[in-house]
Length: 374
Ligand SMILES: *Cc1c(COP(=O)(O)O)cnc(C)c1O
Image (cartoon, rainbow, N blue to C red):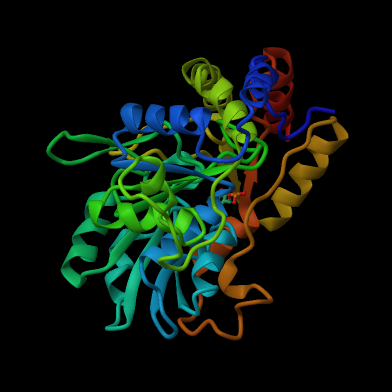
């Protein structure tokens, strides 16, 4: 069976975990955590990076930092993972779901303004498949209405957006806040893991406090105060050094991992581009491709179901993705703004193909041939 995903190990993960254990300090915010955070800040231009135990956690931190209160509205795309909305629901926000473009699962930036009311506090945008949303438009609307922009960059490590003036910025460094995932299905992994990025300096001090259970312990360890205590809300959002040590082994190889994934992505694109029965991912001019995912869009639900079956008969595991959140069991009753047909279209028709470091050319050719013969 060709699996959908296979976590890639660089070989150094256990070595660094042993090193972390040998130091005798395996709780959070130690040497490996700081090395990872510094790496991210320097390579991608985040003003501040804080590792978390998941992207979901990082989004929960965003909800607290954005000061989401009962009755506040938060705009979130419907075609996304539960966490993009859940983190804000836990602060009692009302979620206003937004639709995708017809030809791209990302949030339709031209329609955001229609969803804004005087209760709108934040907008969560999701860079689906690591491909940038239209950030310039989003920032413009958000600034006009004084709304906080949170990038769910769970899939978007090592991906960029280019502004009209030519400035190129890493995803997760553009909104006020950003959230990444190092879950084993992402490009760079730590089993479970994540990161909060803070680009608006106003949030940095408070973020460190929320991260450390509502205490000013980070300031204490930097010698800025002589005792630490409970000063705010928060939780235990920081990962142990064991997780950070694992992540460090991945980061040392990020360029290699990205190069390999991109080669696989390009081979799929080359092999499937003449297939008239499916459409391929759209990469707008302003976006780069971090090869997080290769998906195809089938004509309808029936043909996708048949294709999944045919692939399975050939020992290939391809999987569909999100179910529109606005129709979910948890939120359908609370959803007020009508049908979101593009989101529903991707729910029915989008299919993700196997993409992982160790997928070899022969296996990939078999996948391409199976789809083209279908
Ligand atoms: C994977 C993912 C998440 C959740 O990440 P965790 O680290 O598992 O919490 C959130 N949003 C999107 C868009 C994702 O792809």
